[in-house]
Length: 28
Image 1 (cartoon, rainbow, N blue to C red):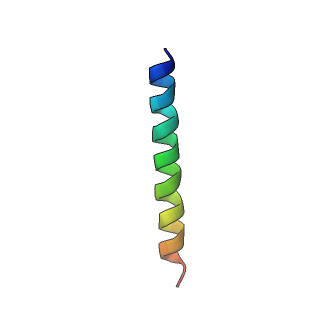
Image 2: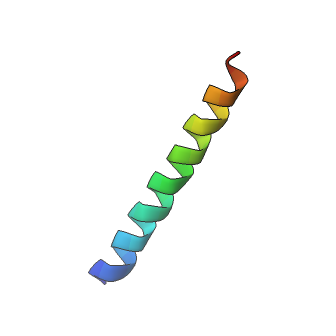
């Protein structure tokens, strides 16, 4: 279903956003 595919994409984007935020927090 297209709906679940969209949800998977949103989750992956959200995880990417969190990971980039963690990297930025590591930078002084």
